[in-house]
Image (cartoon, rainbow, N blue to C red):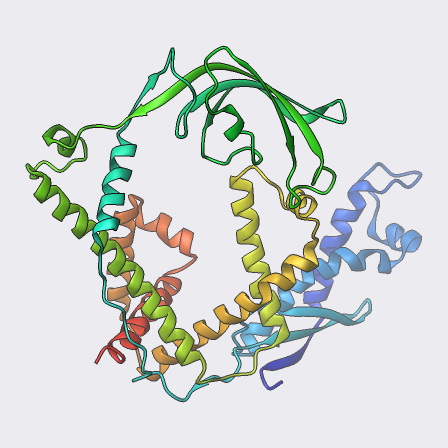
Length: 417
């Protein structure tokens, strides 16, 4: 492919000698030779016993950094992924590296204007308004204890439970003073439903079955749960009145009609935002059909790994490691990699479309404009400018984001007529 460049970099003379000397200084710290204290072995004695080849691994590690610097001083190539490197020759006088650099492939978008994509108008139904109002009431609901009543849908019960499979205690199937909302579907099917109509202090035995899509060693198996109900709590929804409006921060709202209009406006604004995102995505999908590009497998692989790292961070936030995910789902690294490839290719194609628009429209920003934007962003995040630049890596990344944002605006403007 035209965007794959193989370049040899040879280090010799003082450059390579320095790497070998530094490697010796590291190796000699751990070497023991009769007649010399640890770390005090002369270089000539060391080389006579171990040979200069013993220094090559550490010397090469240092030399790669020197070669990288030389590579980019002598070539104006901009890699889009981390270059790969191989050692093709090594001796006491020199080391030769072969770098494989993949630059951005040639990109052409035949058309990104007047794509025939229409933006939907935001509409809000009465049912949606009513549902949102109930949701707001739920958020401000007061939780009260039901001392005499029965468990009903929506209640929260505080329970002890013990699970048994084949007469043996279920690993991880025991809990004490556990708060469970009935209808949350936190437990397996039948568990929450089985507690409905029971009262405080009752002991309930639930004979259930694990679903077929459960973990491998439990799916489809019979399980018995012994449950003790300690407490039943229920929600008391607030009345729709001025006190309720104030609790929501709507100090200017006095009547139910005004409140309904405020809820409608909020829902409409939310839908406008969602439909705007959908419009952009639909435009990118349409424009990507006009994209001509040959994407290297290595670029796809790099994007997949970036996505997998993000997914791993999400799992960690839920207290699950990637290894546990593979175990639970019965998959492996290769399966997740393959699963993410279509989305990775889409991400790359969309990015190339946006970058093409930015280049074609000659979008650029002055250093002053970029600094002003960075300061604005830092203020919005409540951090110092230096912290923002460190987080982004450089002001060039801020500039890139600004160009991409403007390119998307042009894409929308070119298709809203």
